[in-house]
Length: 259
Image (cartoon, rainbow, N blue to C red; front, side):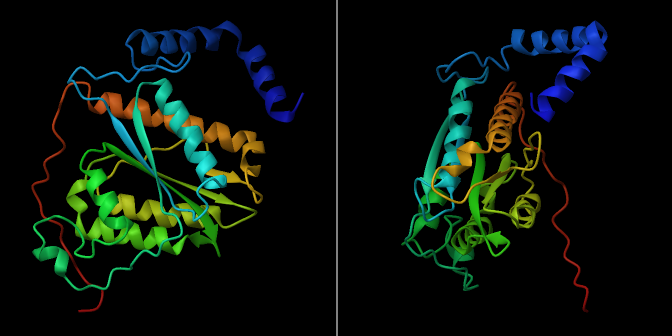
């Protein structure tokens, strides 16, 4: 028995029915409400508003079937168990332009970046129909892949209205270190766009070097599944009654440190 299972079984034995009863009641209440039905793969179900939630997943690794993809696939499989639609888009090996601060997007009718010859244009179009966003990236020198950073910065700057109020999450895959700094970098973009950041049982990190090695990180894979479960729960709650997104009365105020 490993240390995690030993602690879990010891805690359950100590708590006994005192803890088990209310926890069991809570789980039964959630399942009876139809919010989390996870036994087997479920058909895509519309919420009471008639909307079937959809999550767009972006693989920020140039390796289309590498460790980052394995994590996203684990998330996608779990989302389908809860009837949530999903799509994985690959950043691949094609170059992604960086933002050059040309200002063209401001005169583009809110259609996104004027450079429409790379993946940013495709992601912008897909975000019109997506209800949430999950971005996976390998760790390069303690940072996200440069291509995914360029893509996200251009998307958020040129078409921020398409991501506002939509739940988001990032995940990082590394051989040894730098994953937490990578997650912080990604999450800072979400937080600036009023996007609820979906969490998990741990930081959204998985470890692996060789192709597919990340699957041996059992806790990392479980973290991905928990992330997907939390995302499905939040999406179904958001779309449960068709309530509109928060209306903010104040425009953002900018105050420079150097004046």
